[in-house]
Length: 373
Image (cartoon, rainbow, N blue to C red):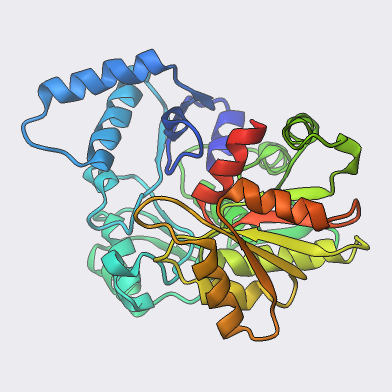
């Protein structure tokens, strides 16, 4: 959202994000464009020839991204933290603004298993006298203490700014600005509202027209994304079925309870407008809180197909289905050996008026995306 706003304001913007779905190139964008392989390999060579010690994958890729951004002569660089904050490779940069979107229990092996511990790690990106925007409504004291220690100017949700919605639009305001009748967008509303709060902390006079335009344009690949015409045609070709017989298909990379809560809200709203079933194809990594995810979605999903993800962090469809059935006894679930096997199984039982959701991990969506891209 911030990227879209700043681009529409006419600035030169670079974004570093992770993970990627299909290609490494997705991690580094300049002016909303992925860079060619040649640019990355040249940057990799530069980093490799100049490094003085061994680097992790993320450290190497972060340095490469920063090198590419320096060459591009940008106005703004947006760095998405990969894991936590305090020990993350992106924290090598002293930022002019720190943004915390949410605080949820995830990556507990690295960040701790309490919100207080995780908040402390995330607060590691705060710099002395740096403005901080916090989109999390229930902020642990550990984060506030760190902000106070570093004399940060904090803009907290529901304290310094707020947003509210009705059925047709939404409003945002702080002590100086009020934006009314805002259009809904394709990303979580809380994230959009946090981006608007962040904009107020930047040294740019961004018009309300630009903000509204950006809300209408913003999109995020793999976040509650309906498969459109060209990808539906490729899927139909893969399956050997007429494209007009396919149900609505939605993909979502959400993999923790916080994301599942948002997904449940979107599916609940959608269910009011359809006549058919909600069918889930779910693949999750074994270190994720599957039961926390299931708790939000079992009330809305009618049929479950659990699928195997590869790699040392992956788990089998059988394991995932067993977790689902043992913790939610009234739920029936099948298992398949791959994402596409699960999609095929789901589509065999689906009719035109149903919705098929493919979700649970970046890996799950990536495996499906590779077929339809």
